[in-house]
Amino acid sequence: MPIKAPAVRADGTFPAAGRPFPPDRMPLLRAGRPRKRWRYVGLYSEDVMLCVGRVDVGGVPQAFWAVWDRGAGVLHERTAFGTRGVLVGGPGDRLGRVRVRARGVEIDLRLEPGGDAVDVCSPHGRAWIWTRKTPMRASGTVRAGGRARHVRGLALVDDSAGHHARRTDWEWSAGTGTLADGRTALWNVVTGIHDGPTVSERTVWIGGRAHALGPVGFALALDGVAFAEGGALAFTAEGVRARRDGLGPVRSDYVQPFGTFTGSVPGPTGPLELTSGFGVMERHHARW
Image 1 (tube, rainbow, N blue to C red):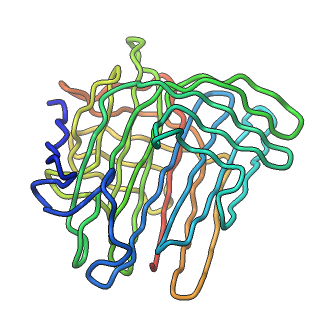
Image 2 (image 1 turned 60 degrees about the vertical axis):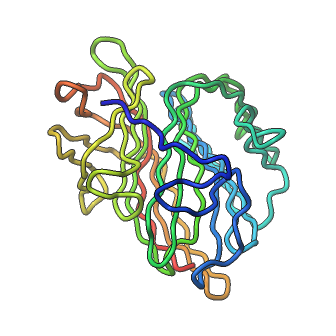
């Protein structure tokens, strides 16, 4: 059945948690944990795959972007403290624009609604965390390495916030594809965060309509994911992002390859075969 986002009270809290979540202000500390929040936008297409994000951990801002030019076989990327030159949103934090201005790279995308948004809140350690996953239709231009491309396709926006446990480990995949009947598929699956057996962020969107998924299993080599409903995706890595960071007590260690998918995703009545699929896999260990 389609996912229904939980009702939000007028004061901005979820009834299940009784805690403030965006757009309400969140305290910098709760239960001894610093506030974490981020917005990640991923666009996955046959010619170009990219991601742009802004992160804030305990009041320290960071921004990152990456462009995988499949035709040239080149990955352009940068991660930096501060958010100069990176816009992910717009006035009032609307989702309408993504823009990057950096040496050798320019990204300018417009976003329009592309499907059902999914909200989830979960207990995590001694506190609560929240996420919203929003499918969008993206179009615009990407200039990287002297090459200019017009891009168009489905994008996934990940808005997350909360007071996560000191150590948080997750495996995650997001991607888009075309089904044999011509419909679009978009998926977001995870273990380690918002992964309750019945209430989770695990979702597949078929033609923009969201359907909840059961537990998933990631291959040790990060080259596949299996679904409880049946069916699986095989992944072939192409451009690989990987980074280790440390700032005081905060540590981050991740690998996130862009690549292609084959196989099937769960549908309302059974597995649905992909005729093409593009996206990312990720394994992330964080101490924050």
